Length: 190
Image (cartoon, rainbow, N blue to C red; front, top):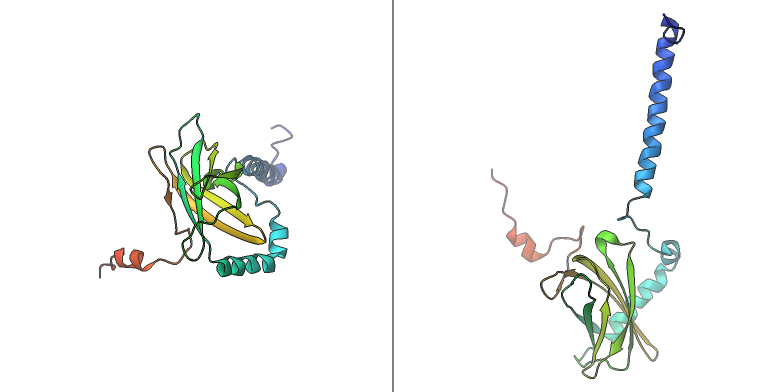
């Protein structure tokens, strides 16, 4: 019998072998997790958490302004930019003109790929731009509109497609079910 396979070395060899395999699997898992192209880290997340009071104050300013945001996103076509039109309306439904709109767009499944754009004001009160969006799916848009001393922020999600205009998505994972959703749920069979 060889010196490595002696009876008194079998159990220590098995224990060391299991530990080596465990460490190797750990390194492989770390490598796989670090190379995931779909994982993204929110930029400056700590500063945003520290500034939570200012985020809530901005939410109150948004409510006080009474502005609303309407959106229209055209079809996503490979090799072309998708047209994005935003309309900001005040509390009386009148278009807010003379504002500067900035948008940050990211596909939820690929949140590490962020697209930034400044929208151009059109004559009809709309703000337009074209975004280099390459994939259909659920997109999140973070919009900042400023006019004079007024600052309005809004987040919206659109379900972009290759065949037509994107549809707004109101419900997010983890949201409480709406009345419409509750009425559609069938009771469990006894």
